[in-house]
Length: 104
Image (cartoon, rainbow, N blue to C red):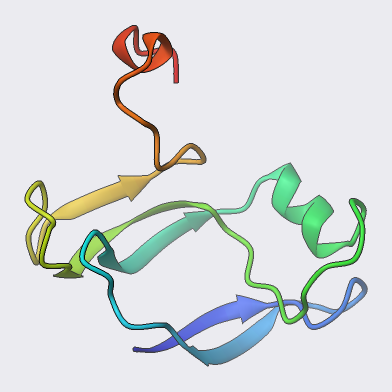
């Protein structure tokens, strides 16, 4: 999937449009057209290289809102066109004490 994002190409570079190719959807994946993305302090620290070397070019932004474009064959909870949001915590187990008590 051809994609565009804003990327930093080094720790002291401005963010610029960046075209890249996403991997093919896996059976449990959801492809999202990102309409809005938050940039938080941890994104800025990452882009600036404050926490060590980074794999530039780097596209920050892990808190997103968008629309489902496509779902993998095993996805049942979402369908094309659904509005979705992804926070900073993803891929939780849904089975531990913290999940059952809505602590994460």
